[in-house]
Image 1 (spheres, rainbow, N blue to C red):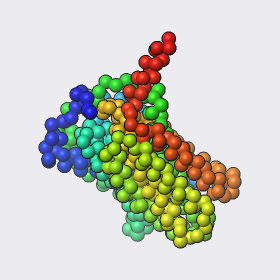
Image 2: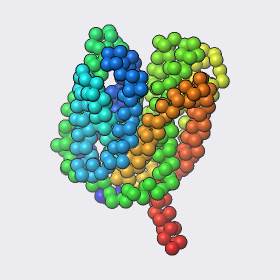
Image 3: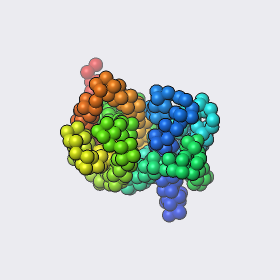
Length: 414
C-alpha cells in the first residue's frame, strides 16, 4: 500500500503519459550496462594503443563498480532535494559527458570518463526501481521485468558489436566506445517530457533511513544483491579464461559469454513477474541458487565440451533470475517509495563493492593455485550463501517494521 505522501503525478494517469514514461524507463535501462560491457571485447586494443598495464586495464571494469558502491547510498538524498525525474535527467547528462570524455585521446580522460559513467549509472541503478514502485504500484513485477530485460539485452548487444564497430567499420576502440553517446542523447530527449510534467520536488515519505542499516532483513537483501552481482562480474571477467584453459578457442569462449547473457534474458523478465504475484518468494530463491549450483558443478566436475553450453546456459538463467529477484526485493520488502530508494541504495552500495572485489580475488586465487578448481568451489560456496540469504529475504515482511521491532525491544531492555 502506497503512503499518501508518496506523490504520483497525474501525468501517469493518461495513456500517452504512461507510454512516455515506459519508453523513458526502457531507454534509461538500456544505458545502464552497455557502456561497461562494450569495453571487454576491445580491451586488448585499448591496452595496445594506450600502453596501460593489465592492472590498469582491469580498473576500467572495477572503477564503475566502486562508483556504484560509493554513490548508491547518497543518491536517495539527492533525489529528495531535486526530485527523482530531475536526478535521473542529471544522471543521463553525466553519462553522456562520461562517454564522450572516455573517447578522447588522453589516458587520463579514459579513466575520468569511466568514473563519470560509473557515477551516472549508480544514480539510475538506485532510483529506477523506486520510480517503478511509485508510478506502477499494481504492476511492479512486469515493469521491473521490462526494465531488467532492456538493461541486459543492450548489455549483450554491446558485447557483440564492439569488435564490428572498432575493426569492421574502422572506427577504432574510441569510436566503438563513443558510439554509445547516441543512445544517451536519445534517452535525454525522451526524458525531457518527464521534467515538464512533474513538480521539481517529490515527496518520498518520511521513513528514517538510518534504521535500515539495523535491519537484519535489509542485510539479507543486501547480501543477496551482492552475491548475485559477484557471480555476474566474475563470470564476465573469468569464464572465458576458464573455458580457454580447458582447450576452447578464444572465439568459442567469447560466444559462450554471449550465450550466457542471452540465456539470462527470459529469466530476467519472468522472475520479477512471478515474484510480484506472490507474497513469499523463498521458492523462487531456491530456484535461483539451484541453477547456479548446477551450472558451476557441471563446469567443475565434467570435461565434456558439448555439455559446456548447458552449464553456461544454467549460469545465465541464474544470473538473470537472481538480478530480477534482487531488484524486486527493493519494492516487495519496503512499504513506501522512500524506503524502496533507501533499500536500493544500501543493497547496491555493498553489492557492487562485493562485485568489485570478486574478479580481483578470484584472479588472485587462480594465480596462487595455478588452476580453476578452488575458484569454482568458492563459487559453489557462494551459491550456498545465496540460497541462505534468499530464504531469509524471500520471506514475507518489511524491513522498516522489522527494524522498528528491534528498536522497541532494545528500549524495553533498558
